[in-house]
Amino acid sequence: MLTEGGYPYATGESGRWCDRLVRGLGQHSFDLYALGPAGTPLPLPPNARVARTADLGGPDAPTPERTGLCEPRVSRRAYGRQDRRRFTEAYHRLVTGLCAEDAESVEDAEGAEGGGTSFADGLYALAELARERGGLPGALRSDDAVRALEAACRAPGARRGAAAAGLADHLAFAEHLERALRPLSLDWYEDDALAAADLCHAAGGGTTALPGLLAKRFFGTPLLVTEYGVPLRAHYLSTAGADRSAPLRTLLAALHGRLAGEIYRQAALLTPGNAHARRWQEKCGADRARIRTVHPGMAADRFAEVGEDEESGDPATLVWVGRVEPAKDLIGLLHAFAEIRARQPDARLRIVAVPDRDGGAGHLTYCKGLAAQLFPDEATGAHAVGENPVTFEELGGPEAPTLEDTYASGALVVMSSLVEGFPASLVEAMFCARATVSTDVGAVVEIVGGTGLVVPPRNPRALADACLALLRDPERRHRLGAAARARALELFTVEQNLAAFRGIYLELLSHAPVRHRPGDGVPFAHPAEAHVPGSWAHKAVTAGTGAPDA
Image (cartoon, rainbow, N blue to C red; front, top):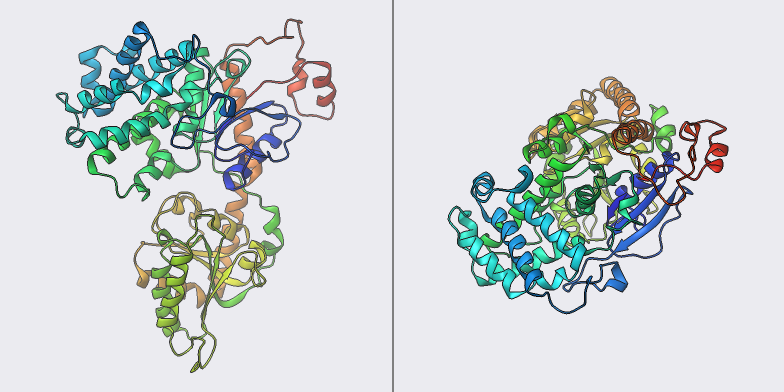
């Protein structure tokens, strides 16, 4: 299993999903290959082990001792003339494919090998050079690389944005490209590493899946890519590079787009977590026949008590749960609630913030100030006449110790986001048999189905009308809540997620060639019954030598 910035070293929904999958598929052995800072791993089940880790962060290329980057196969000195020629040719193909407006024209003009793209051919040629000779990070930062990039940007047929790039853009992009391609220089592509795997399961696209892409190239190992969020979409929406020039943003978008397209083309199977992610994959060239939507599995047991108590919760309280950030549009929600309060004076809004490592304190302060302005007569202060109908709390605090308690406190759960992928808070609310009012973004409609009300984003009036319709109709609210719980238990549980991947693993392994490892020379070393769940399966595994690696 290939991960980045998460399991088995970090918590979070991605890490929890990986852990549930590994523990739930005990008939498979998992070797974990983690990109990102290493630390003390989370407790692992007997069928999983940390095989390799690599921290690819930082402005400079990491050292082999610290991250697993491969040693140069000949020496640490610069490439010789022949290796420099190989590098220049490979890098030229890669950046030409990146800069070209129409990738197909480049393929026709230069004759891409094996029906691939110019970008893909250059990528694999660089990977083969790194595997044989090492030393790739230094070459990617060399003057030759910058000159090749400059020539590709100014070549006929280049993207208009790339053609406008200057020297500063070339240098900045060359640095970014070097960091993005660091997985090519890992020592993971050896007989005792990814070469021994029966299947590579990448818990994300982009850089996370790049080692699996190379394992398929070098060893024919099937690649399974699971995306519950789309890295390419996240790159397009990111504000981290808002200060970058337009040509540099063009080049970066081309890099992430070409890499995503190649991963989607080469994966044996893609498992997006929702139809929204699936549409992104198809737009990037993924074959529909190799896409299976597998909804993320979430633990439902913790919400069972709340979900079975239909009478719990204040009938006039709305609950909002999530990270406090502009994309959640709390400002729009507060304006909508001002209208709700004018039409139903006993209504209350409970905003429960999930702790966020990236901050958000400034935006939270702004939202609190806006709430005080919208409800001046009720705000706390020297001339207050009552409690403010809007409360701001933090999950884990005395008023909101757990998610279960939070959802149980209200009659209606509201989501006002402008941008979403797969909003877990909606599923949690459905497990709790709460009716929901949500904005039509991301996978919301797919999650809710007909069990909640969905309104356009950036429309406080529509949000207010929908909330009032359910606050004033308890029977309808309870009916929708019960339907929501039934839908969530059918589609979004851990059990359905495990069942789907159990079948996918067996399907992909059945089409892959058998791999022989040290100690596998004994006929019938792996009894067939060892792979069948049952009370006697453990004895069969003990008698053999193990189970397939993933």
